[in-house]
Image 1 (cartoon, rainbow, N blue to C red):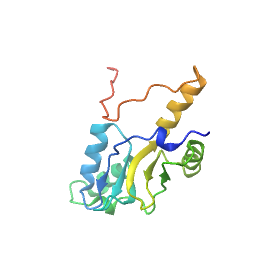
Image 2: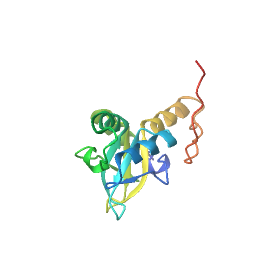
Image 3: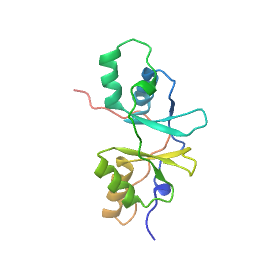
Length: 148
């Protein structure tokens, strides 16, 4: 029995509509401490992915201009299914040099998100005591930062 994406994915997933202002996506990422946000249409179908680096580039280029997320997102998105083996999802992320995959159903509707952090957390658990490291709440709490 192999470990499946559905066992580790974050749900409910964060998402943004394609017609939302790109700064909204940036605000979501900052508040929720994530680096990728799937872009969905009105039916919840994944149409693309926004990465933090894309938004940082957009911010320097567009500054305060009203620009929709669809104008700064990638041209294609790689997804996984709930029944995708975790090892396969990890290989995809490594090969494509991406940090996360939206998890979709057969109609490409967003169900969750699997990230490199999810994979690493599971690996740490397997290397430790034979059980996975504790999952963080999907409520996304702010990270503690060390004072400098």
